[in-house]
Length: 455
Image (cartoon, one colour):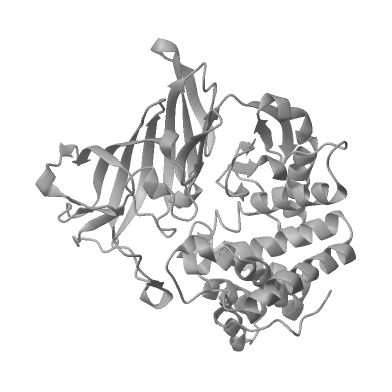
């Protein structure tokens, strides 16, 4: 096995190729799943031709085609981590790959896995490479369609990102659903869920008058415990419109809550997936703290629709660009929904009890790390909670109106892009004609936040 390689922020390079459209087809089965991808590829520099290197792990290749011509073994190189096409065509071309995976044996719970009778995905940070061969990096943004086919009796619900375009029955007791996401996204936001689930349905009318269908999917026995989650989702949608002027952009928003989802919660575009603990609540068993936690985490994942999805990270070193900012937004949301004083004291207490010891110990690292070996290890209280305090300092320096002006410019400049912490800083600076160049030092140093405002 190849030794793990340390990745450095200073070594970031633009990709040689970008993807325009990605059409996925899943044939879900009990013993194997066949994944077909059709990708429109174009070079960053027109007229250039470089090797196309795709990430892939635990995948069995069935076929590879370039511009509809099947490649032979000598036309590509394959190892345990990468598929390389040394001489792709010059200009835009179509890449079609068919591969086989085994979700039922996927104990890593990354990529597509099967648990408790449900197929489920977790692709952040680098799980998509366990589904199909791809440039598994967040600066590759493309428009996706996803067709899912499965046994209807075992998997009556078939979900993916975007809007449901088509569905129907097939021979042999199978059925299919075709989903289309009209917004470009990185592959870490791809999601698929299939299983025997039922939904609580509601609607939300946006400020522009569009009606959005909201659905929270759970196993049947858990459905009565989803009322507070639905309230939280509608409150978050309204709050984001009122405070930041951000409106939801699709006709459908799905939430899935299953008991064995491994990441806690994940903001996949229009298909948020949660562990049941973060969605289900009833007065008989849930505490006030449980209700508050559900409000916050439902809000957090919804708020990612703009801060993380519409504007995403150039690379994983920029993780706090989406997470620190979105934690700040969910803190403000919870403050407005309840007691701002109580919420702020709780957030500072968490910072002092968990993040300060990290800064003072051997695991100290900057809000934006300089290097990593495995990215999954950097989902930390420093990146999230300290990152939120860095965002809060922008608001302290610029005031609420100045901060909103900076946010507006950030979205105006970077909607549909993969960007950096410097881009967020530049939007705040330029929108307010402010001079605080030393502020960027907060992103690169493991410094104590000793001098901060409680309110």
